[in-house]
Image 1 (cartoon, one colour):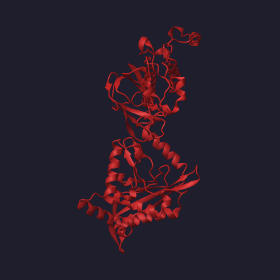
Image 2 (cartoon, rainbow, N blue to C red; image 1 turned 60 degrees about the horizontal axis):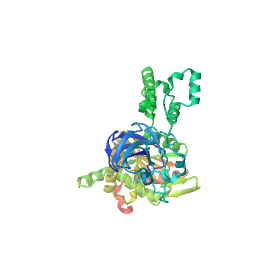
Image 3 (cartoon, helix red, strand yellow; image 1 turned 90 degrees about the horizontal axis):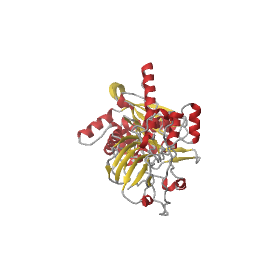
Image 4 (cartoon, rainbow, N blue to C red; image 1 turned 90 degrees about the vertical axis):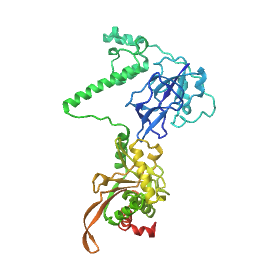
Length: 449
């Protein structure tokens, strides 16, 4: 029997950390290859983490709700097989013969100096856990040993501080972690064999300390503190970067959309799936073809403007975990019913945390339906890397000039923000009037779509 340690893989998005949302296994459980063992949330989506081996869970090294760096150990398995089975282990999955349960707790993620020479073999991705080693040969890893006894220097330091009788048993990496988290090892009772203090003891003490401090602050000030992480953290960073990188300009257009609401009613009554957002999305795709400056991105490093040949239409979706912007690839090819269905599927997947990383990256233009919240207009912030975003306001029945008279009409305001480096007011106005013109008179689409 051998102990195999599994580390947090790179989920293929270029991200450096993930939040462990929930474990689906416990120590002592028998797991099969590719069985879902945990849910992990990146800055973009919740991803199921499959087991890289068939075996028995020895211990879980990360707590639900904790943020784990890529390459950090999260679980250990006991598996059948000889010691040299490590040669076939996928990246991020390490086999150690006779390893002490506390031995792999290395905050740097490298257990043996020989590992540092194997960057390709440690580059893990979720699908298949990374590329195979081209040479087919992997150096044998040494079993790592260490002493949990305090060193002579630690003895001397403790004696100077008057704590010589309270020296704690802990591995060097655990001592380093305790120092970083401000935990006094002499106050802990180790849960490891022989009373050894392990990583879980330290993190538990740190969490309890933080919890007490948070509770005191809440009672004193009547406030609630919510950790900034996951989607909310990524959205905040992206919006700040966008606001201070791209010079935003916002233009507004209020449109009589009565004929569009009537058309949607007729399509729905005849059994076709249609919505105002689906119709607007179709109109945007047509308008972007006429105004390619707003379907582009600014490549500062290359000193170029990149105009896209297709529309990857981002749809802003409000979820319990924050704002997400999945996209519809080649949206210009879809009909209004197909667009309506695609939007509904994206929104459902986003709220159920079932989006793939591919659906959350690569959009070229975004639509945000703020009208569902009863809002008429706004100044939306660009999704990073895009030239424009259109906010769609609520449809309101109000007096409006129609055919020389005042009548009650369905009216909507469109708000377009765009990157002034990529487009001028002329291009922004053209896109707005193109979209508004089709919504005012959808029958005109027969002549242009």
